[in-house]
Image (tube, rainbow, N blue to C red; front, top):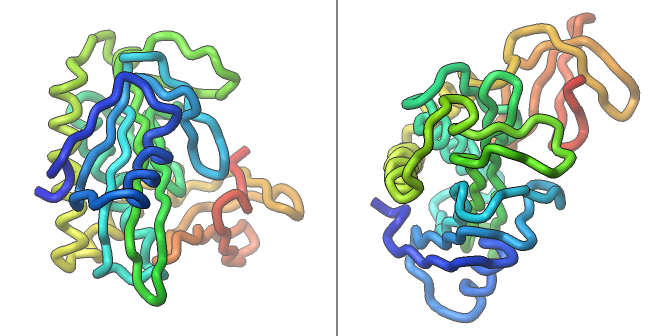
Length: 245
């Protein structure tokens, strides 16, 4: 098992991803090291978004990896693998778990987890990657203006042991990460697409031009989303270029 080879815990941090980045700059860190905290004072999500989490209620971790065997242009495969690992973990407890492109995890129409992947490229190879994960476990009340947060406890009405939950999550993440390291990336891609939120169903979207109706078809190796509109045109979008309505 690579993920969880070392485990560094803090009562609180501004950001587990920021701390992981500082560690990488200043010392030798083992592949798969997990940085965990009970509370983040400046937790962050994709594209500068903030991540709300009540102290001691959820899983807040960053994982340090050295995925030099993955070409930089294919780095989105890590997001696919980690999204599936979280999805596999949650499916033990609840139904209707999907991946909202690019890497948010939904239960029905509510967000329960998110991933922030930050990579360092050296020449033609990935030198390191930091995968930050926020997974809502026991939080009951959300105070931010985020439109649709949910937790496992709110869904099931149960409380969960965070240590046991982390061990289970790590196991599922390792299975999916090993899958891409062992050359089974086609399975990762297939499973990711099979679990995409609203895939194959006509929905309303907005891009820089305006609104349109279309259905999600696939996500390519660089993470671009393909949507076929109701006129039969295939459109490709990078993150933040299109939104669900």
